[in-house]
Image (cartoon, rainbow, N blue to C red; front, side, top):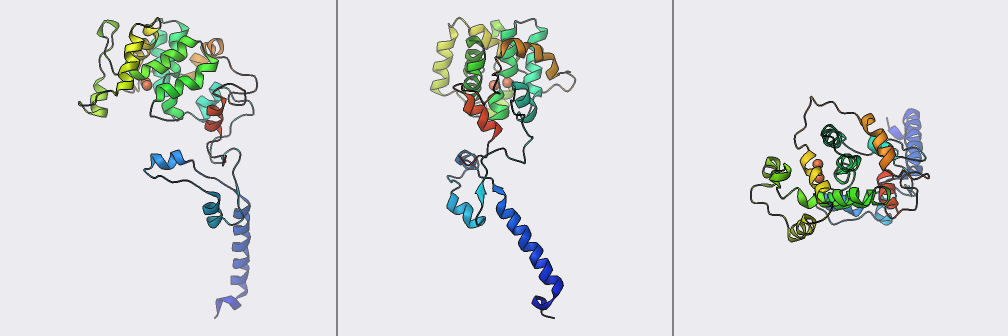
Length: 255
Ligand SMILES: [Fe+2]
Ligand SMILES: [Fe+2]
């Protein structure tokens, strides 16, 4: 039987068409060039190419429905819970610093030192992380987060920091820090906050210890006292780095 004359098939086709129309009304999610670059492609999503695939579509300009929803006025803790891909390393480092009796600036710096990695971009994570938190923390904390990018490649055995075995495994024994990292280290060595950044390295836990009990709740008060949470919500304020938090919140907005 010719299937075009089959009433079932016609109603199936109608269902299919309706489904397609629904999809057409969905907001199409696009990717930033950076996502493609990270996959080894120099490429971008253009409206013409997306329309060719999804005729008549409109593009997502808000939250990505596939990601955990963020509250209307997000806090740093909401980003920890909904956007940071991992907490364990940060919590373990901060717990180490807490147990060693360091001051709250050091503990906060340890807690936030790798937020660039866990939520944003690996390359130059110390610089990205520092910039993200700069408007909200004491200058010493963001300076330390920025500078740990360089210090972690240089041992300071008197301070209790050896070159990490893990780095030999990760980068090979022939890896040499680039000149901009060496220059950052040289500048940091005699800086008044050198030890704050060095203590990030000392408390940086390179191997995950499954027996170490860590809990974000242990740091809520320290965050409350040392991180200036904007009233409008982190990312919805007017700080110089608010756009970075918004980008984490809405990574697939078309513009
Ligand atoms: Fe780091
Ligand atoms: Fe780290």
